Amino acid sequence: MSRIGAMFARLGAQRRLALIAYLTVGYPRLDDTPSLVEAAAQSGADAIELGIPFSDPLADGRTIQAASQVALKGGVTVARALEAATAARKRTDVPLLFMTYVNPILAFGLERFCRAAAAAGVDGLIVPDLPPTESVDLRRAADASHVDVVFFVAPTSSDGGIAAACRAATGFIYCIAVTGVTGARAELDPSLLPLIDTVRKQTKLPIVVGFGISRVEHLKALEGKADGVIVASALLDAIARAPDDPATQVRQFLGGLRRQPTG
Image (cartoon, rainbow, N blue to C red; front, side):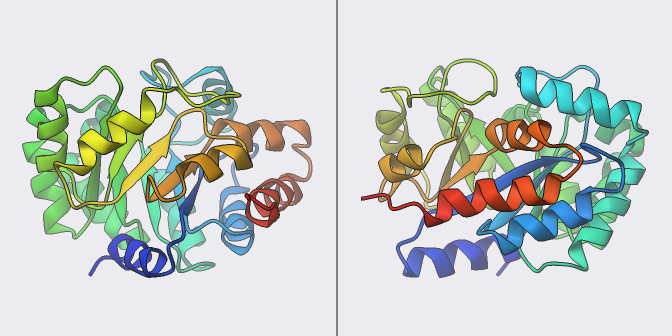
């Protein structure tokens, strides 16, 4: 069983929602990522999504775009992201996933990237601009390196699109909570729970909700409905408020999500 599969099996037995923290590699500084991964894991994160900064993102909102620009100016490349993941893996056993786009993978070399990601201790890939129907080559390379490939479904997904994502994905299904780009939001979209029900009928994979998740109320609303949540922009916003001490911000924000009563 993969590290991702083992995590969901363990949390499922505990009837506990997985908390996945998103960090942009190299934000706020090039060398911060390993210590922030360690801080997140020690503060309640069950897995870490590492965003490889890209100059032309598709799904990233203002917060992640800003973090990516800082990281790119700081010199982060795919190779340096792999180095950061390797260093982070030495500090924690929680699952690590890369979030990146097709162009950086192709520029690095598709099979080479999958092999290097696996060697760095990365367990899964999330590629927002890759439709499942065009993912055969990446999935073949990822399978060969024992790396999961996660696909998105959204409130705007057609029945065929949901079915294709469920057939192609390994690890989990990434269920987008809103129509639009990433960014912290006050309320969950009312179309989210029906979407989860629709996806649940087509796959046995865990369902993880992302985009806009930022409050303990969101976690409470999704307990018993989804299998996990991804917290991204709200965590980066916390880091941005005190970039000279990002580890403390990560510990306080994630620790707060885990400690606050949800009843």
